[in-house]
Amino acid sequence: MSKIAVVYWSGTGNTEAMANAVAEGAKNAGAEVSVFTPEDFNQGMVNDFDAIAFGCPAMGSEVLEESEFDPMFSQVEGELSGKKIALFGSFGWGDCTWMRDWEDRVKAAGADLVGDGLTVNDAPDDDALAKCKDLGASII
Image (cartoon, rainbow, N blue to C red; front, side):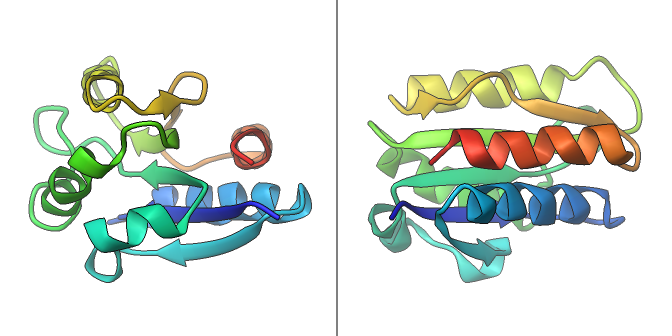
């Protein structure tokens, strides 16, 4: 059984809804899933999981959340080589530059990025939640 971590930060609840759907999709596909927020996940935990789905919304000028999520991600980034990684997050403006930059960081770390980062404009609707569940299933 695959062990999957879903690690997310959410300010409005949109990315949290996505994280719960990603976790549900992985569970439904047979994985053992653990869900974390940035304060509960660290680099020492990376090797405990077969794959990790990271979720963070676009903030400010299209960057990852800077006080909790990005510091945690920067800490674990060096441990991601060879690991299956999925990315997801919501946004309310811009053209998803933050996601493309994040994908580049994951690839530069030597991780196996599963598909493209999944982005949702504002609150996820039923179609978006179904895509989140599919993303969860795809990382096991």
